[in-house]
Image (cartoon, rainbow, N blue to C red):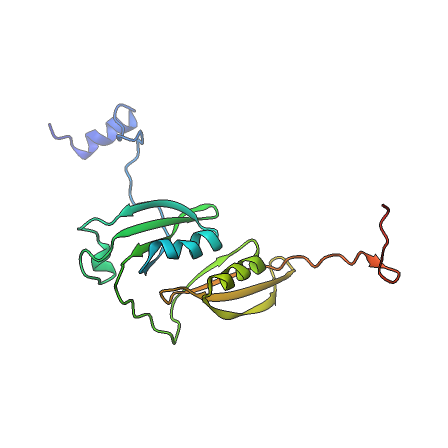
Length: 190
């Protein structure tokens, strides 16, 4: 039996009908989602930067289905994407999607750098040290004074293995307090 819109509305209002997930209101639009998605040739290698160094939290990693919209969206040959990873940021889920396309030449232009992933990090100097240890190309760091925090900060960039530009920034570590006075002697009580 097919119900009219008015009858359905009356049943919802009366509390006699609900959606399968318990809602009593119809969904007018999907929840807002803001995600940057990139292609890489080696997902495990990419995770050493995005997860282990930049601190994004791993979410779901799944095999890419043969009918995935990713093939159309990224304009890549069907079957070329093997896996897709979702990474979470601080307080937000699925902020970065990474699709693995082994053997595909991504042809990301070196100049101009038209797109960047940008994020804050808790320890900008430590992050820069870890990026250097990976041997990736670094865009020279620059110090700044944070208008928000009123403290010195630093921003730097890195080009990942596939040519993606990543900019990270944060507050600098506080300078160690000058506890040495009177010719280098420690003035604290022991």
